[in-house]
Image (cartoon, rainbow, N blue to C red; front, side, top):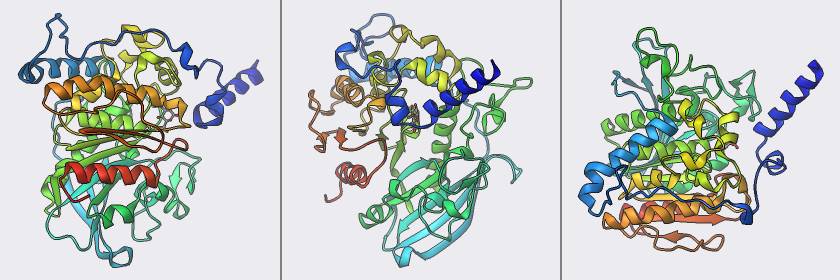
Length: 431
Ligand code: GCU
């Protein structure tokens, strides 16, 4: 019995933590388009009381808030309104980083008066030639800031980290983890195009395992006697998104950055996070979701690839506890993910998929944008402007953008090339 239990534990681990092969072999996952069930999406422009929203003002005054609240209560949980004092400290600065092409800065944001308490380390690369404030891409990463570039000047993360990544030993980063995620961050290209890049490690905000919310930032917000978030309060995605807003607070004070031109970016679970950050915090000028899938850009009701049940079972800490009510009951959700994209309107949002990343349901990611279009149009923007999925490697869109590229679940130079073009277009620079 014990051996059997251990076997199942191990098998479940293989399935959960090796995206790709194991996931595509799961018998409970649908990858057949003809088996996508019939579904009716909640209408972004119909209020809970049945009223049809037909003006931008009505959207702004009533419906937007209503949808935001539904996502808080049923999907990601509410983010505490309490403001905590955050202190920033520039830890290191190098004006001649990356062979003289970049200014590298590291800034720590302390969330309590204890310097050993919860904090967030920002890594900033800015173009050395920049005159004045530069627009930046801001994103959380999986492997610590030292994973972004094999640059010996970057401080090594000391936080808990998932084993299995390059250079991670006993849940800590080692020197060998430098540059571990370099292929996901097109640093040179970003700098060459006149943008800065700001990154932070997502585990600074909440280490990515289910510990009942004892570590990370959640406890800073507990009321006396509270030991974990209530069923409608934030999970890890909420905490990660909160961190992105605190990074933006800092960028507003940094005179090398144009905080009105910050594109928030994220891949996969961090793509779910960038969307939720962009939906809640309207200071983010552009929002980018790379392969965000279930609980991100993909429509939950399609039940293609990863489903609400599968994600809740595997990662119970990502969403609020209420979200579990919708495992195998997607049709009961009062929202679907097109409404998350609609919350970003009229600001530009870019959704990217990868052809082999069927776990994330590329078509469901595309359709979310299509269904968000009516809100963009109501707000006087063109939205996506297409209803048929474009061929691979053929970006489409206007105020919102989409591409599906060849290849699998990753962030590639191709993806970054599109994000840079999109940012150029919307930040009104030469393309
Ligand atoms: C798993 C998970 C996805 C998630 C991905 C990631 O595959 O099921 O929902 O997007 O991990 O974050 O890499």
